[in-house]
Image (cartoon, rainbow, N blue to C red; front, side):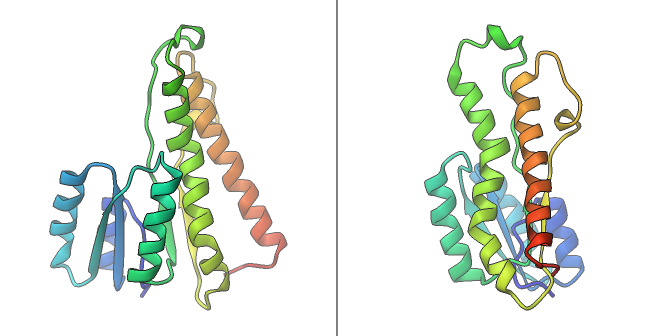
Length: 173
């Protein structure tokens, strides 16, 4: 059974059902996180919950270090955070921070989180997986959702490129 897995709540329940020894949850919403941790606690696995703003590279690095220290090597990583902002024509967006936040959460966070855990996964002696949740918006253009679509296109292109890099480097586990 995998020693630790940063997972969305539904996947966390499934991981516990399948015998995960340790499950790790990240969320920016502390009350919802604590409620989920409490729900999962009695199911037979150790459950860790961390309040993390994944739009912050510093928060990602700090929390990832804690996870490695407290839970060990991550074998299954779910990058599931996502936001939708700015339901308007692109030229009508008058707040650049909405663009930056969308790109930070939907595109950069999965990259930074994976960068934190992938080295341990590559050197681990067991099969490991990274699951990046995107959107059909990453494959199909959407009017009034240009920034969201761009963030998901980036996530999909990056995911596939990392997959190819891992294959090219001979990391098939």
